[in-house]
Length: 156
Image 1 (tube, rainbow, N blue to C red):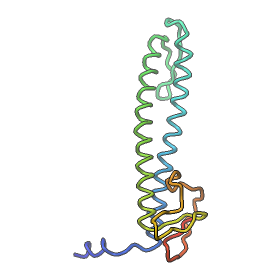
Image 2 (image 1 turned 60 degrees about the vertical axis):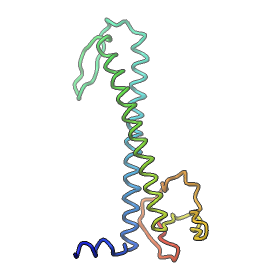
Image 3 (image 1 turned 45 degrees about the vertical axis):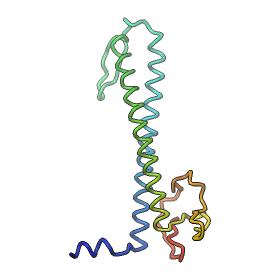
């Protein structure tokens, strides 16, 4: 019974800000994974492009789990192409996660009437938040200062 009453208690401003910051952190972590994977994919594509023009019997070296291995181009090229395909699939999944996290962040922001520093105040009449919606709550600034306001929580 005690657990049920804890769930119905309204969140404090500090808890709301903490939840918002957690969602922003999760979205940034996904964005960092996307960036790293895109860089790896570009490297793979550059190597694939070069190896396509090279004799298939020629020796090449590949770094596998920190070990430099000597192989022939005909053995390395298919593995690189397969890895690049897997990276493309993983990127697609990460981008979906990023978009879902952005929607979750926006819903949380509207639900708790959060506005970021520099944003227009929330218009209670129309439900518009004063943002273009394209940033998904992603603003610079790592501080978690909050200000009490009748229209919600201000996060800077």
